[in-house]
Each structure stands twice: as structure tokens, then as C-alpha cells.
Length: 66
Image (cartoon, rainbow, N blue to C red; front, top):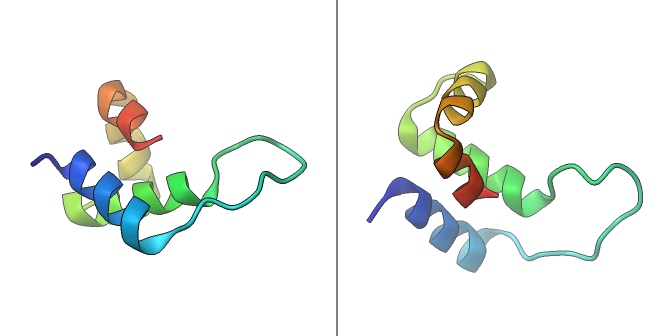
């Protein structure tokens, strides 16, 4: 199973429940933020800059995490 699928399965089932929408900038919700954090940890990225650079190069994985 791919890392993206593991993250989606784990985060969706165990960690975060989707809350009501809030006002303000649309941005990313809690669910997407936690998915990216778990993904970065599993892939061994040490900081946010490396995660951003990697996801910019691998758009397919970025879309699956959103």
C-alpha cells in the first residue's frame, strides 16, 4: 500500500473528524493539514520547505492528500 493511501486511511478513520465550515479564507482544513503532517513524517522530511518542494514536484500525490 502506498504512503498516501496509508495516510488517508489512518487520518480519516482515527485522528480527525471533519468539522463544520468556518468563515474566512478557504485554505486547507484540519483534515488536509494532518494528512500532510503525517505524510511528511512517514516520508522522513525534516522541515516544511522540503515537504512543499516535494509536493510541488509530485502533484499527483499532493492531490491525493487534499
